[in-house]
Image 1 (cartoon, rainbow, N blue to C red):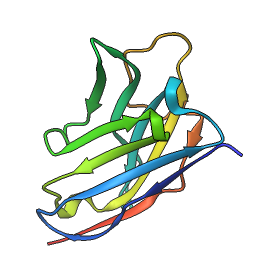
Image 2: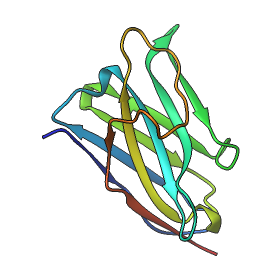
Image 3: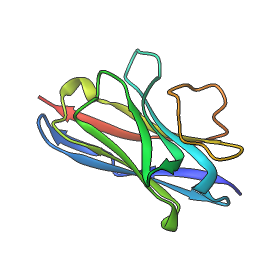
Amino acid sequence: QAQLVESGGGLVQSGGSLRLSCVASGFSLESYVIAWFRQAPGKEREGISCISPHTTNAVYTTLYSDSVKDRFTISRDNAVNTAYLQMDNLKPEDTAVYFCAAEQFIGYGTSCRLREYGMEYWGKGTLVNVSS
């Protein structure tokens, strides 16, 4: 059964760091755009980062929302079928359930978009709680 499973969430103090993992099973992430979304209590889910399935000059294309830019870093390791979200300088407003999602790209893809539409696989989420 194809699925994504997130891990790495937890309770952290403001200014701290966490690293989320997203492990795929039942399919290979190699040709998939991977994106991270989050949903804070009482708010709609928002896209915060994505990474292209393929590289340009050995570099993946990444995108970040303004709310996490310069603090979060997305990466992927196709050899272990896993994507990561390194979160530094966490703030209380980062408290949310974090989801990873994947969308297959047909052909050679060097771009990604922060959108829910088209995502084929979703994890169940991992909770990040940042205390002030």
